[in-house]
Image (cartoon, rainbow, N blue to C red; front, side, top):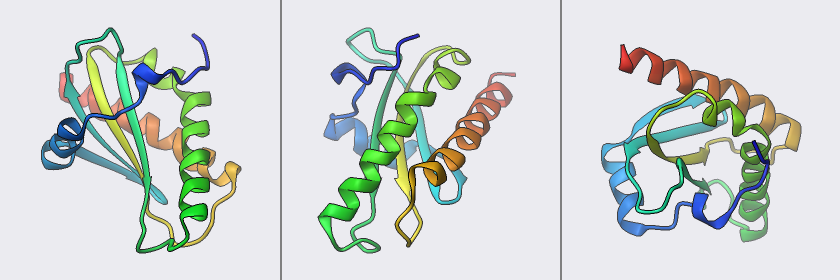
Length: 127
C-alpha cells in the first residue's frame, strides 16, 4: 500500500459531489464529518476523496486551505485503514466542523476513529 494521493483518487466531479450531498450517508467524529456514497467510477480507483472547511467558520482562505491540507495529509497517511477493509467503490467528503484552528495531531486523532466508524457502518450495512 503506497501512501500517495494521486489525481485519480481526488473527488472533482461536480455531479458526483452534488449526488454525494443529496444521497450520501454521514458519520461524525467531532470536529470532522465524513459523508460517503457507494458508487462506481470509469477509472480503476477504489475511492475518490474531497475535503472542505466552512467559509462561515473560517473567513480567511489561508486558514481554510491550511485545514484542508491537514485533512488531506491525515487521510493520505491513514487511508490503508479504509482500502484494506472495504469492497466496492466509494466517494468521500471530509468536512471540518470545528470553529478553532486545529493542529495536525488533532486532525489525525479525529480522522482515525472516524475511518474506523465508517468501516463499522459498512460492515453493518453489508450484513
